[in-house]
Amino acid sequence: MKKQKKIAIYGKGGIGKSTTVANISAAYSQQGKNLMVIGCDPKADTTRTLYGKRIPTVVSTLKDNHKPKIDDLVFTGYNGIKCVESGGPEPGVGCAGRGVIVAMKRLENVGAFNEDLDIIFYDVLGDVVCGGFSVPLREDYADEVFIVSSGEYMSLYAANNISRGIKKLHGNLAGIICNCRNIPNEENIVKLFAEKIGTKIIGTIHRSNLIQQSELDAKTVVEKYPESEEAEEYNDLALKILNNNDYIVPEPLNDEEFENFFKQFI
Image 1 (cartoon, rainbow, N blue to C red):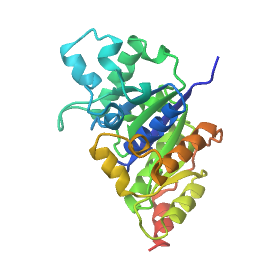
Image 2 (cartoon, rainbow, N blue to C red):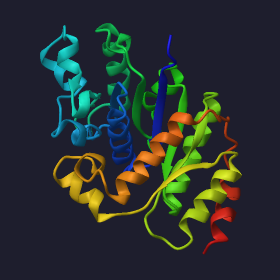
Image 3 (spheres, helix red, strand yellow):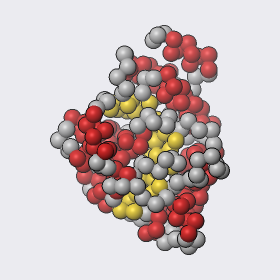
């Protein structure tokens, strides 16, 4: 029986984790891998560039359909990628993480996890203190975690907090994906932070207007510009993630240690 990779991608809201998940998923699909991508972010936009538009969320579907079938929850996108969005309540109403809990149970009920999948991705919001967002790790849906971060203070602050959660849940941190915002000394800052908590940079994605242009057309850069340097970076990252077998339980910095770490770059 083949080994299925179950990967959770965490990061601060707006840091580019959804873009990262979509593009490396597109890269895997071009290699003939069978994938499912589950968006666990209330914005429900993880799979937009894989499906070509927003898909109905599990939570919204359940409002009108109490006995959904698999085709009501799982949509087939680019190159056969299975796309799911957990969804959540309207802004200001209820717990956003509750949508993740509901979605996981419903996907189990309809047999979504029983399909012949090589890789399952969970795109998870990482800067909200809510138990629902820990579900992929707490309930053993994901076996390994990557954190997406830039070299910015708040992005690394969120990454450090996520590391605390991973440690508490005895999760496997597999590395940090450096998603550059073009700040001075950025890759070195992220590299040193990764070393501080006991891990490494698994790959680097440089900022590019081509990625944004692709998203405006509801496509990944891997699909729209397959010969570009940007697509090459995502393909390289996808290969490194696939071949990685190096996991650790992180040792996050306390608040004083984190402040002192970052001050050296100011």
